[in-house]
Length: 395
Image 1: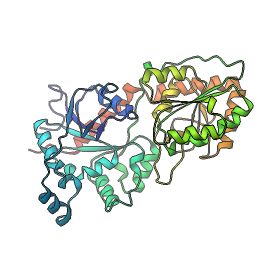
Image 2 (image 1 turned 90 degrees about the horizontal axis):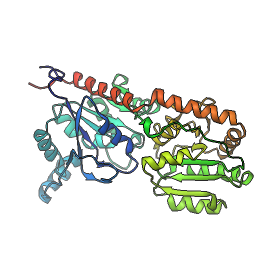
Image 3 (image 1 turned 30 degrees about the vertical axis):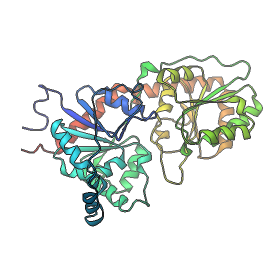
Image 4 (image 1 turned 90 degrees about the vertical axis):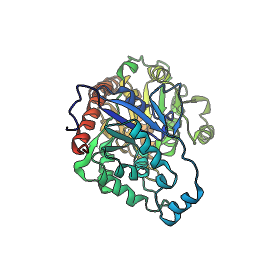
């Protein structure tokens, strides 16, 4: 019997492996897992987080293997086995997958795929790995990691990437071009409806950025540009939604620039709260930049959500951003770390009401055409079909 026979009798099953299910910034993964239509899924995870925010019940929590220090020492230092071996996780996962059979496994994040490489090679079903941005970076301090990444890219039948720029990086790492597929993460458009925004009559422009507070999001560049704009428009306001390790630094930098009273750090917001924030704003800002560790952006989900609601975007020529933001059509793009150019973009778009409205409408239209949730799920399930067709089911 072929992989796809019998699909009419019962839905095929995908085991969705995500090391932590889920961190607050992983809403896009929750949408994929819960949005499947033709496939059933259960989640394999080592840690369950944010249960109220992500209420998914079909979870298999991977138990910690019993510690056998002598065996661990032998596997780790004498046989030099991978962590998944000497930690006992491999045997645990094999038992779990025998108890809960699946037709294929979707492993979220490239570094997790490297960790699970022994399982991928031993399991007799197809596994595919999706790359999202930060997982593309090299790990020079982790001996053998780059070679294992190359082996992973050769071993799995398909490799998924959130943007064309990530696909190019993966091909440069040695992934065969014929294995690479685009895996857009879709936006639930009903949750981010298009909104007509009245222009402020008193210069009270409202800028917004939503992201994890880390260096690649270009937050300091955004604040420098906003400080210049604020000097000319003292009633302007900048809201930053999100959390992360730079929160204290960002607050201090805002104070240093003298704009602390006009910059609001909101922390992580729910989907409803984000939609309400976008509806009250005029421009979305997202000047991503490449940090030293090459932690590249895919296509930012918060940016797509904002665009769906009708916000024009001011961003950078970085990663997958230009795949969604067309310079001069639905936003303006500048070079990375160029706060002066970003400031000039703020000036330009707020001084031309026609541009603001035209870009906002075009932003919403482009997301609805290219990043709609149901279409993205349909394409993902076609990739599951393809992966299964490439790996015969053992007799």
